[in-house]
Image 1 (cartoon, rainbow, N blue to C red):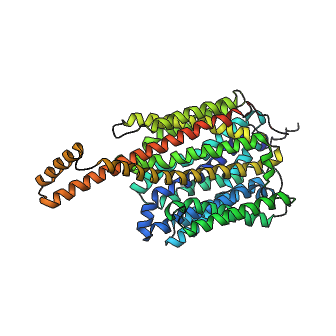
Image 2 (image 1 turned 180 degrees about the horizontal axis):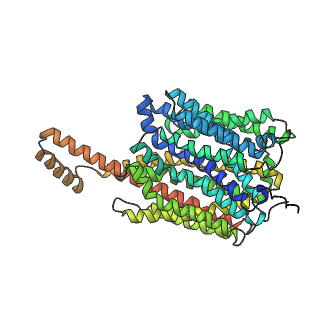
Length: 516
């Protein structure tokens, strides 16, 4: 009797879940690496004797190469095949994670970080494409939820894991931790994942690639170094801005003229895709901006270490992940527009509530402020990605994924740059306001100086020394209050900006069927 033919693994229901594990591993460690290194920078600077300017290049080199690799996904995916591109990207990223951990100097670490970013830049967009391919149409909302869980939870978990590894063990472990995960992800990719479509010959738009690299590179350098160099006073920053504008114009003209563009800008003719992408950029400002500012606030204004700050943020992070998955399950059953609008409202309330924070705010209240932020973001990201990607024909999903991810990333970088500047400017403003009222004629000031001078005299500091110490203490308190007010102003701005997103969110279609 003839035995029935064995069903190939890629046709079995379990196949998509095995592929999911392989993809989640890659997206998580890659996305986590974007945030975890910042925690370790002070220790890296101490080990290698780096100044702040050079230390910034540890992060900047990674961002530059990653930003160029992201929109390259469509061309590389067509040239190599989606499975091969994912495996190659993960292998390069994992190998240079090892080399970063073994780096022997500041220069070697910067070079390895650049190569690590180049290898990993395609991981997020190509993973989105593979998720789209292996899940049936009715489960693609769930697929995007799982994808978002890996790509967005990574940066959120970075401060917790990085804080522990740096404080308790060694900064090199933030790179070595990628190795076992990368090895398992690669093994699963080679053993399980099937190439969905064979490689095809496609001409490289070399001119478009050069202009794109110049455009993104100058923009990221501008955003990264503008605050330190001076936005308007630095010739270096002005030159970067000129290069950015010139290369952007040249890039747009080139891509609209060539037959096979490196980046298909005509995707933005699709209203649903362009609207969802713009929303992701604006919300990326709020997400990355708050992700950047909250740990700084907890460590500078309150007596928390990097690890303790990460622990306080952990409940909100877990709720973020839970709602990413939940909205993935609900997408297709519940209006995507309703989920996005509800998420924006919850996120805006959480961020606005943070503007009311003070030294007397209890830790439990801070946790709930961050919980609302996490729930709101969890409601937004999955349906927004589904509405964007489902609006595209299948042959444009790879290009659309890369463009969507790089735009969201640039929004985050822009948010961090703007918020850094805003905090500094508002701190100076509030300090000037407070100093204006701290005069010897002010009853409160004179009583404070009298009491503190007496305190220092009681500790053995006499005469002029006691007076100078009391003035220094007053100056420190004024500076702390000014910084707290600056943080409150920034939270208020982020809350208003996020709330304004309701208008374009209402223009999204309630549901979006996959394009043919």
